[in-house]
Image: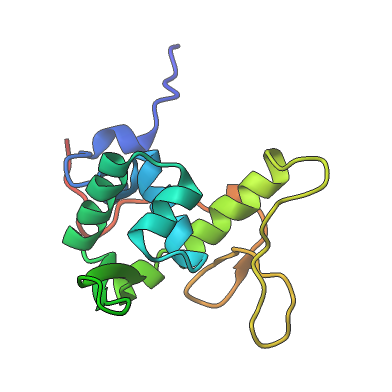
Length: 160
């Protein structure tokens, strides 16, 4: 008797996958570096370029993509008599990425930080305690083990 270990996911199309669509915007590593800068308060192009080390054209392209997808918005500013420039701020859509960035920071701190620890920690503004990403179901249960989460077809699932 031959048994199949094929995943049920193979029966569903990936043409409209939300993860693939999100990664089309965020999947290039420099996009996440730009978001890191903005979240850390580095919002002006020259400061962002100097702090991140990204080439000018790469930074310009990533900022344009994130603005186009309404993750960042451009806010004009002017230093004295200099020409108007823009800084970049998270939109509401961009702020919804905060848990994703927190999860990446947690994972990076666990697996890739220097022996002295991570260079940045996220802290709760209200009490100062460290903030970590957690999984929670809609019923309010905290999911302690990722293995306790199972993917299932959603309302937009299309059969293959």
